[in-house]
Length: 103
Image (cartoon, rainbow, N blue to C red):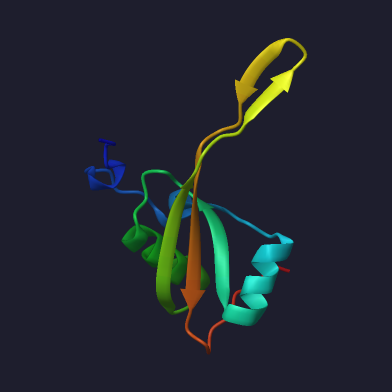
Protein backbone atom coordinates (compact mmCIF):
# COMPACT_ATOMS: atom_id res chain seq x y z
CA UNK A 1 0.00 0.00 0.00
CA UNK A 2 1.36 3.41 -0.94
CA UNK A 3 1.82 6.19 1.60
CA UNK A 4 -0.47 9.21 1.31
CA UNK A 5 1.84 12.22 1.40
CA UNK A 6 -1.01 14.74 1.32
CA UNK A 7 -2.00 14.05 4.94
CA UNK A 8 1.08 15.65 6.50
CA UNK A 9 1.20 18.67 8.78
CA UNK A 10 3.23 20.69 6.28
CA UNK A 11 1.73 23.92 5.09
CA UNK A 12 2.98 25.08 1.70
CA UNK A 13 2.75 28.60 0.34
CA UNK A 14 0.94 29.06 -3.02
CA UNK A 15 4.22 29.74 -4.87
CA UNK A 16 5.62 26.47 -3.44
CA UNK A 17 2.63 24.44 -4.62
CA UNK A 18 2.55 25.52 -8.30
CA UNK A 19 5.98 24.81 -9.75
CA UNK A 20 5.32 25.75 -13.38
CA UNK A 21 2.55 25.87 -15.97
CA UNK A 22 2.66 23.16 -18.63
CA UNK A 23 2.44 25.11 -21.87
CA UNK A 24 2.16 22.43 -24.55
CA UNK A 25 0.06 21.97 -27.67
CA UNK A 26 -2.32 19.68 -25.85
CA UNK A 27 -2.47 22.01 -22.87
CA UNK A 28 -3.24 25.06 -25.01
CA UNK A 29 -5.97 23.12 -26.80
CA UNK A 30 -7.58 22.25 -23.45
CA UNK A 31 -7.24 25.86 -22.32
CA UNK A 32 -8.96 27.23 -25.43
CA UNK A 33 -11.67 24.61 -25.69
CA UNK A 34 -12.43 23.56 -22.09
CA UNK A 35 -10.92 26.41 -20.04
CA UNK A 36 -8.66 23.85 -18.28
CA UNK A 37 -5.01 24.57 -17.48
CA UNK A 38 -2.21 22.13 -16.60
CA UNK A 39 0.46 22.75 -13.97
CA UNK A 40 3.37 20.83 -12.51
CA UNK A 41 2.73 20.85 -8.78
CA UNK A 42 4.52 19.85 -5.60
CA UNK A 43 4.16 16.14 -4.85
CA UNK A 44 2.98 16.89 -1.30
CA UNK A 45 0.12 19.12 -2.47
CA UNK A 46 -3.47 17.85 -2.53
CA UNK A 47 -6.39 19.01 -4.65
CA UNK A 48 -7.53 21.57 -2.08
CA UNK A 49 -4.01 23.02 -1.88
CA UNK A 50 -3.83 23.35 -5.67
CA UNK A 51 -7.27 25.01 -5.76
CA UNK A 52 -6.29 27.59 -3.13
CA UNK A 53 -2.95 28.29 -4.83
CA UNK A 54 -4.46 28.89 -8.29
CA UNK A 55 -7.26 31.06 -6.90
CA UNK A 56 -4.86 33.21 -4.88
CA UNK A 57 -2.07 33.55 -7.47
CA UNK A 58 -4.19 34.15 -10.58
CA UNK A 59 -7.33 35.67 -8.97
CA UNK A 60 -9.73 33.25 -10.71
CA UNK A 61 -12.56 30.89 -9.67
CA UNK A 62 -11.70 27.17 -9.89
CA UNK A 63 -14.47 24.69 -10.73
CA UNK A 64 -12.54 21.41 -10.42
CA UNK A 65 -9.03 20.02 -9.96
CA UNK A 66 -7.75 16.67 -11.26
CA UNK A 67 -4.31 15.41 -10.22
CA UNK A 68 -2.14 12.59 -11.48
CA UNK A 69 1.28 11.26 -10.57
CA UNK A 70 3.59 10.86 -13.55
CA UNK A 71 6.11 8.02 -13.52
CA UNK A 72 9.71 8.68 -14.48
CA UNK A 73 10.82 7.20 -17.79
CA UNK A 74 13.89 5.00 -18.13
CA UNK A 75 16.70 6.71 -20.03
CA UNK A 76 20.15 5.58 -21.15
CA UNK A 77 23.31 7.58 -21.60
CA UNK A 78 26.19 5.57 -23.04
CA UNK A 79 26.56 2.53 -20.75
CA UNK A 80 24.58 3.94 -17.83
CA UNK A 81 20.91 3.61 -17.20
CA UNK A 82 18.86 6.09 -15.22
CA UNK A 83 15.41 7.57 -15.11
CA UNK A 84 13.72 10.93 -15.27
CA UNK A 85 12.08 12.33 -12.17
CA UNK A 86 8.67 11.36 -10.84
CA UNK A 87 6.35 14.39 -10.79
CA UNK A 88 2.78 15.41 -10.11
CA UNK A 89 0.50 17.09 -12.64
CA UNK A 90 -2.69 19.02 -11.92
CA UNK A 91 -5.37 19.94 -14.46
CA UNK A 92 -7.42 22.88 -13.20
CA UNK A 93 -10.77 23.72 -14.77
CA UNK A 94 -11.87 27.33 -14.35
CA UNK A 95 -15.23 29.05 -14.25
CA UNK A 96 -16.33 30.07 -17.80
CA UNK A 97 -15.96 33.79 -17.07
CA UNK A 98 -12.32 33.50 -15.92
CA UNK A 99 -9.15 33.03 -17.98
CA UNK A 100 -5.39 32.76 -17.33
CA UNK A 101 -3.06 34.47 -19.81
CA UNK A 102 0.44 32.99 -19.87
CA UNK A 103 1.63 35.18 -22.75
